[in-house]
Image (cartoon, rainbow, N blue to C red):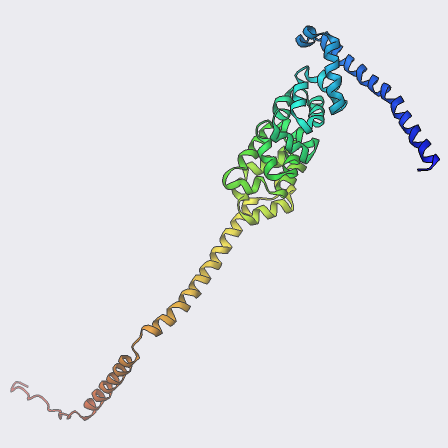
Amino acid sequence: MNTRSIVFLAVTILCLFAATPAWAGSKSKAAQEAAEYLFKQGSKEVVEHGVEAFARKVETIAMKHGDDVFRAVKAVGPQALPLIERAGSHGGRAAKILATHGEHAAVLVVSRPSAMSLVAKHGDVAALALVKHPGIAEPLVEKAGGSAIAALTAVGPQAGRRLAILAEGETAHIATHPKVLEVIARFGDRAMDFVWKHKGSLVVTAALAAFVADPEPFITGGRDITKIVAENAVKPLAEASGRAAENAAAQIAPEVGRNTNWTVVFIAAVGGLAIVVGLRMWLTRRPVIPFQPLPRSPSS
């Protein structure tokens, strides 16, 4: 290592040591402010343990999980700290969720490892969907991922419940269809209202395809989806009837040919012909009886 490199390394180390007190000082100050804020709010834990002790605890956790810890403590209270700690490697994200969404998020998202995994996978927007639709968003996000998140964040509670209901049973392919979810994300509650009212029609593949291809006319009432269903119900029936008739004819002809005793048919035909010929000969050779007039009565 040359002299220049040694000097550069020494200067870097000195700078780091010089910056550490300032950095630690800023953490201490933010922790102190958070503790004092809760004390003024009448937090029982801060009052019992003292502002200084609680501030040190906040500072320790903030050094591990980031500055969002300070905001989380102010938003949620002392209970934010154990929630952040229990989140483990997701602690920093948990602190941000608590700071952004408040105490409501503590029970709905941060306290649930499965929910935190979804947030880690899909980002902070997943937390918004999970908080906005408690109890129903998580299964939908697990099934449909980012498309479900976009749809859920665009609709209200009733639409969210309806989407969750559709995601179960025979209509699951509608509720988890990426294109359907994109339409809901685009048009919000209006789109979900249409999907809910016409879920029976959307089970038909042609109707579903027409809807996702150009949804706005259906949503605004300019196009009737039941007509598409009717058209696609009549056409297959007619085609099926024609095919059935053709298939039946094709099956009957060989079957008749296989089951016919052609020897008997030939003998019967020859016998019938002989009878016809003999009958004609008998009629032509029959003796003719001469006509004799009836005798007249004396009175005539």
